Image 1 (cartoon, rainbow, N blue to C red):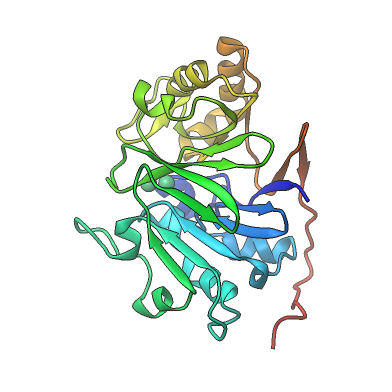
Image 2 (cartoon, helix red, strand yellow):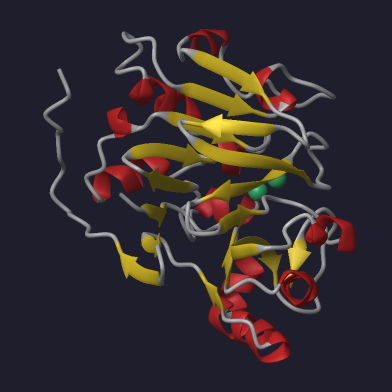
Length: 277
Ligand SMILES: [Zn+2]
Ligand SMILES: [Zn+2]
């Protein structure tokens, strides 16, 4: 049945998000016929329209933390999961800030939307989630939303890890040892470290410690986009010998015996799916 990730967005940070220099829609995981949407920020809905993905097929959504580049389209995604709010189905997973609000952040979702899915769960580091049959481990992050976490997804063909927004530390990197594919939020380029985020220099340390088969930059900020994210990724590959690339919007990755990269098919004509009333 397979495992595919589709990158709806590859931007991150407030300026990329404001200007939609890159989309910030998070990513879709298809695993054994089930669909999980992770971090549906601004642009997620527009991208799903472009690739003619009917979001009523989505089974679950994860919102890692309470920053708009990760949550702003989540209410519509929940409406998709629940077929316009009429069918109680699916699962919503979120940090405490997203679901309840904490420390001046959130909640990110209205009370109404929180009641729509069949299951809702607040996660914490150390939790192991069963996301429609996919084992998902929750890891520690160090970010300006202190309830943020990262994830290790068991693809059936190795671990795909999504680190989500964090500073670098050896302890944070070590949680992802054994990952086959590593999605790293690299907000800024080399020599440009900002608090609570990672730059290319941090990516070198991270990749050196984890040594995955493939490392992919996501959550690209405007400064690294200006600099050229491909060249920044190549710096990591040259320094570590590990295959490293910068993701592009609507890129796909199939994880099987081999890793296969592709591009989702796009359509410019507006589309109304059959499932719409
Ligand atoms: Zn972010
Ligand atoms: Zn953030």
